[in-house]
Image 1 (cartoon, helix red, strand yellow):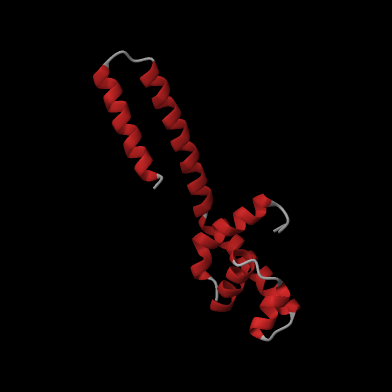
Image 2: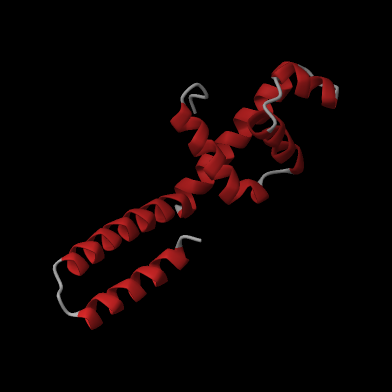
Amino acid sequence: MDRNTVESIAKTSLLFDFYGGLLTERQREVMEFYHEENLSLAEIADEYGISRQAVHDTLKKAETALADYESKLGLVEKLMKSRQAIEEIDAKIDELAAHTADADAVKKLEEIKMIINKLEE
């Protein structure tokens, strides 16, 4: 993964949130130090008494493992598709409510929106 783009950093963080518990303890700790606490390779290496290259290798193995878990399980992709579907449903509800004169129907549509919003909490 290209670490320099905001998108790749966000994706790595999301993968870590979903699958971090499946990594080894060392991989998890190194990922947390590097991605969440923004420590450098040198700082992490000092923390563990290992080389910067060993830290780099651990990070790459962890990132590869996270990508492999996603390719097999697809949980992040499913979440993204669900979020997109919820946004589309929400927009359709707004359209219906704007074009409906029936107060009871508008109330029901607002109740549906409240249920949908609970899904995103």
